[in-house]
Image (cartoon, rainbow, N blue to C red; front, side):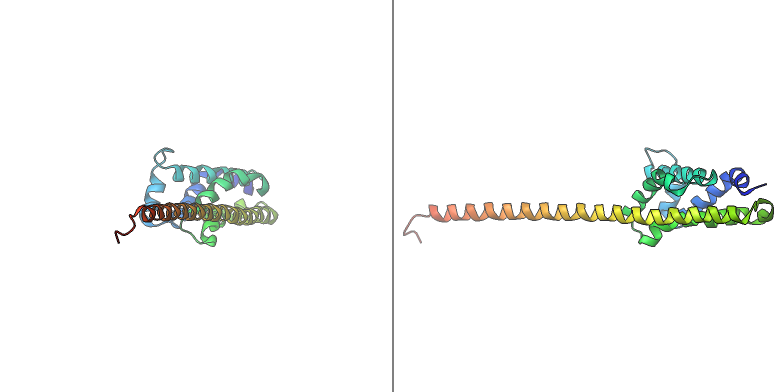
Length: 182
């Protein structure tokens, strides 16, 4: 049996292991919720992660080039970029797929080996996805920073307008004072 066939047959166990590894990156309560609740409306983060991970896995196991898997990767990284993770933690979940595949195919690695070239190709495509994930992470973090800067600028402008109105009101009140009533 070749690597591609083994990846197809072990899809469920590899995806479960990968999800388990990803959930370990979250605090325990969050991981429990994300891992158990599958309803998209109750748990949009968990649903998006699961769907994105499955799409990435299917694409990789079918030999799809990493560049053609940017859609599901973007959804995952978009979520991870606004969560409380370092850049390496945010994008490192992609490389956790290697670990999941290795762990789930370890006992029959000889039978699933196909060729060493197939393994190198798969790992190379996962590495490419990881690099793409880092680029996406940087783009999303830049957007978050731009949004924060815009919010700060709006707040500053609002504060200046309020201050200006207060000063104008104070001047009007001081102009209204009756001369000699001091």
